[in-house]
Amino acid sequence: MGGFAFYAYLCIIKLTHMSTPQLFTPADPRAQRLIASLAGKDKVSILFVCLGNICRSPAAEGVMHAIVDSHDDSARFVIDSAGTGNYHIGDLPDHRMRLHARRRGYELTHRCRQVTESDFDRFDLIIAMDGSNFANLRRLAPSPEAEDKVVEMAAFVSKAMRCYAIPDPYYEGAEGFELVLDLLESGCDNLYNCLSTKEQ
Ligand code: 4NP
Image (spheres, rainbow, N blue to C red):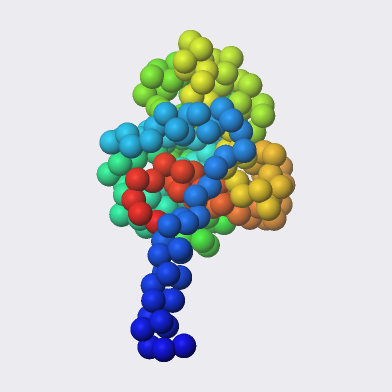
């Protein structure tokens, strides 16, 4: 192959690669519609929700913050977490969750709070960690529009991980916390990928 032909070949490879970004599409059509409705929005607000707001949702908040920071995109996102229960209000995340998160470089400093009706106005996306959180949030939603903001985190986790929910690690050992972080890293990365307006 001559020099020019080889150069042209390299350009074609590069262009082909650039025109097929690795975009993720959630399997759940409701999540697809919700994500599509946020395309190009200047500011996107996301609330992660679990039961206690001391393990899964504050970890999701920490992972998502790290991802938007790493893309220099934190100004576009408001990220928070809350629980459907009220057992731990004001507490830091569970010490085991903080330890496992810290090992991966996430410092979890959120203080536990309970979901309120006003969260359905304040947030564009309300992401439930499991089916029970999802059902509770939909029951709490003050309107059908508010109900439509609720989606499950599992919809964003890469299909190869065969995830149907982010499992509650509270009564589990170290591997339960590691699994939560693995699933959240995949889910948050794909969620950012869906919402990003930056070239990736
Ligand atoms: P989380 O885990 O919902 O991921 O924060 C739990 C934390 C505490 C309790 C249950 C689940 N609890 O029953 O106190």
